[in-house]
Image (cartoon, rainbow, N blue to C red; front, side):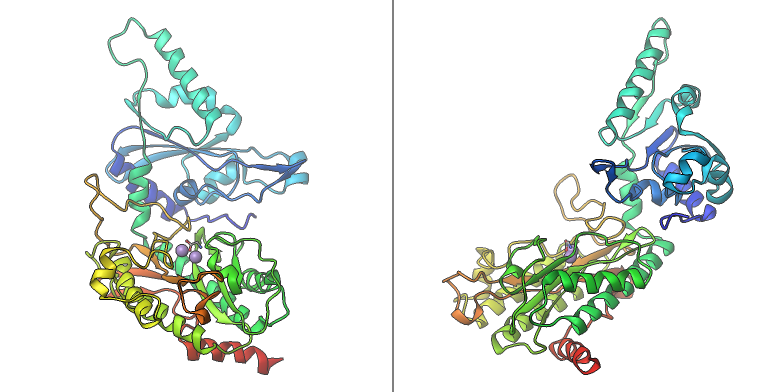
Length: 448
Ligand code: GLY
Ligand code: MN
Ligand code: MN
């Protein structure tokens, strides 16, 4: 069975009902993610679409969910899936087929995906609205328009609309996904715990003389060993000056004595991902200059986490971090002047050029609105999960900063669950203070 199969009929039925209650009357049409060809006969690793998987737990490609509300808290759902095919299954692995879709995943009906277009007109009958986002699946959109055009031709003399109005269901779905339910929180906590184990393994295993990709292998091996089927995003393993490249992915530098290593890696579990950054010394000890930068970033991150309170603007953490980072830049003799004035002119920007937070969940940059229609920051709701990830990046050639800081890049990132009892750090198991980080690095040395 696919590692992405999450057969939990009650959970998924409830999610579909909640969504359809929010959307109102109409027919929901939601395809999963397509398979993508990488090169001659090789596909990229398949991962089900986040929305589709959230509503079904169904893992296979070439699947479409159709569902409609039949009353408050009630709906009917139909899955179109790849049919069983013993000859194909010898090559590609076992399929659930239509029977499995009903028995294991709890939809009301399932049909072969090849019957979608023949059955859809009938399913659409009586629904004035089709909930479907255009643009995600071009071939499906084309066929849909053909169906509607066909209906228009047949019904052109009738008064009622010939075809339904298309309405985008994704904003409602995103709002639902933003406030995690208990199952999503449990999956995120497990993803965070596995992510923590990977980061600890990296701290224990990294040594001067290793290539960055060797540390990547250590982290990702621990993720797999602990039960994560894949990473939530490509690991950033950035040593020395590479830490200043925000989306560094080459991971091919040989690490040297005295380097810091910025590791941004997250394990996926139950469709959700962790997103953690730690920056640690490959030789086991921070230099005084590295420690000075690290302390500033850590102070900012702790202030950011404290700001993640129910009802606060979602970017309160960013504001708190900016204050601490600016104070720290003055202490590090990078900036001169009064902190409020420096903040007013974004004086930190050359060394802190990214945001502090994003929603986290099934997508590492998860769905959910940040601003309302008037551009006002949304308040943090209980059940939202977001990252807090301040950093400071001093390029090796930056003559504006004291010499000893050049080439130092530090980011610290944790995953925060917003609760009425205050911010919950899902990734608290990853060492973070200088003392904890150095102790974890030393644990690797005494073990070998
Ligand atoms: N790992 C991607 C990010 O931190 O946003
Ligand atoms: Mn992040
Ligand atoms: Mn990250």
